[in-house]
Length: 132
Image (tube, one colour):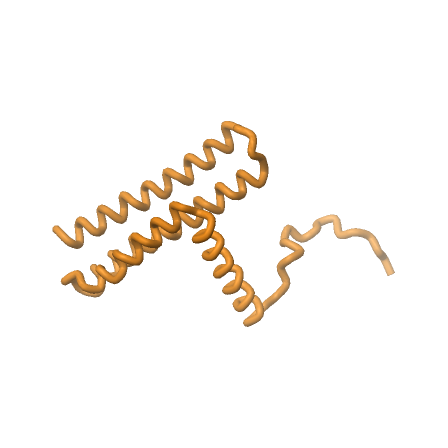
């Protein structure tokens, strides 16, 4: 039997391998762990969760059709999504190095800008649905 190494190793993570419902269940657990960590460790995420806890129920009472309600709720959830991604970028950058580096600053600033744009989008959607 030839035991030569594969000259083209798989680029996949060695941690991947679960399939089907086991993979879905594991992914769900990882997602809950991520939400818990973000809520526990990220002040901005907690503040935006509070905002979402107010705006999402309020969206259900806004006198608009289903599309309007979906836009209001979707723009609110988008802020949480972008904040989670920004927090993941910041954690990764800090894991690589805590030293001040221009590329680390750029990555963090760009993530922060994404959150700002999501918040501007939130204000624009709510303003247009409520007042247009």
